Length: 184
Image (cartoon, rainbow, N blue to C red):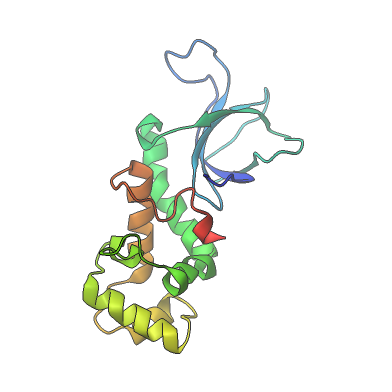
C-alpha cells in the first residue's frame, strides 16, 4: 500500500493547463511533503501558485484544490518541475532530518543477500555492517552523528537526496523513500 500525503509542495503551476490537454484548467504538479509522491492537481479558478507553495490535498475541505488528478511519474513532470525537484527534495530532507535518519536506525534486509542500506548510493557491504554495528550501540541522532561514527562515509544527506530522486525517476525496482510508510 502506498501512503497518502496531506500536503504537497508545488513544483510547477500551469495556469492554463497542460498543452494537448482536453480540459483547459489550472493545474499544479507537486511532491508530497511526507511520503514524496508526485501528484497532479486541478486548481480552483482564481488561485495563483508558485513553486515551493504548500497545498492541502487531504480528505477534508480543500481551499485551493478542486480535485486530485492523480499520481504521476517523473517523466510526466514539466521541465520546470524536474528542475525544481532537487531543490525541494533537499528542503524536505533538511526540514525533517530526524525522519530520514530514522531510516538508518531501522532499515532492514530486503532479501537474504541485500540490505536496504545498500540501496543508498555509496553504501556497500562494509559501510552497511559498520552502520548496523554502530546503531546497535546507540541510534544515530542526525546526519552529522552518522558521518562522525562511520569512518570514510560520504555525506549521508546527499545520499538520501540522490536516492529520493532515483526513487522518483523509477531507476530501481525497490523504493526506499517515495510512498514508503517506513518514513513515518
